[in-house]
Image (spheres, rainbow, N blue to C red):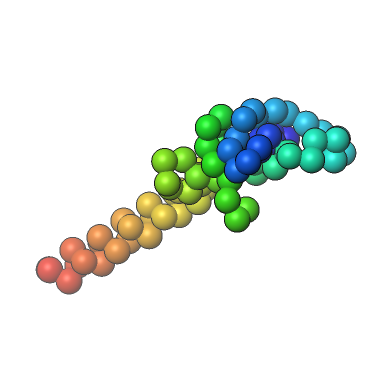
Length: 79
C-alpha cells in the first residue's frame, strides 16, 4: 500500500509499505488510492493540493455524476 510521509503537515515523500510495517514509520499516512504527491498538505485527516482536497478517482466521479445529474434536471425543467 502507498503511504505519504508527512512532516509538519506537508507530504515529504510517498513510499510503498506492507501494512504490517507501517508502525515503523510514525509519520506514514495510508493514501487509500488518493493521488497524493510530494508538496501536498495534510490537515485534519485529509490531503490537500492547492487548497483543494485530493480525492480518489471514485470520489471525483461521484461529484461529477452529481453535477451532471443536476445539469440534466435543470435542462428537463426547460423543456
